[in-house]
Image (cartoon, rainbow, N blue to C red; front, side, top):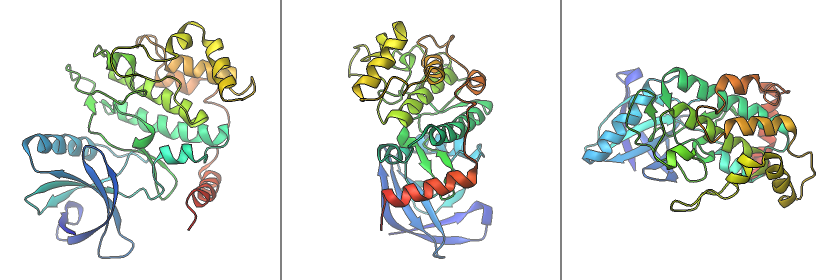
Length: 301
């Protein structure tokens, strides 16, 4: 299938983009597409025409069009040519999402975890400076681009901090308690909580807590809040790790990021001042070398 578009940044350039494979199928389907030149690759998100979908398309397009940061997926403005759907054209992150990267064991040491956590926090700090809350941060919404940079994607649930009515629902086991309870007044604090869940998943390939359907409490969250040291001991034992697997600096950071009270939850500035955050990271060159080897091992030809 071909999709004819005009790239607004190249106002006279009409191109046929060829759909080559499906990349994801959530609420809207995302495809890998190629342009006339072999090296031209993009991701295209398709919104079938309807009143609701048009509103969703416009909302996400407006958010993406206003953002420009190395850790936010790049958006290419286009004029569409098909009456049946709207499209978002974005850069193609060819190394996949962090769910695969984490579960296949590419982040094998704290220095790799911390290096990508820095990139996540950099992207999140930029979003918040732009008065935007993501509200659906999760491993599947973090991609690894060709240059091995982390990219935040999927702004379907994003809202401006000033919007009074909360419409985002988040994703189970990633979302802050106040999102679940529909009492969220600080959307930035909700993003911090989700980033804390991601950090724990980076290190353990697991969720710290599981959120059942309905109004039940999250499994293990009460223990985390009331007996924090015992919580980490229990988790280390379940994973058959030694007692030092969760060091004090890591525990302190998670305790601050996952605080049940959004007013007491750590801010991005608190995170950036924390002891664990300020331990060594890899420069781009060495991180790229490691991830290139890891991705090759994950996806051998």
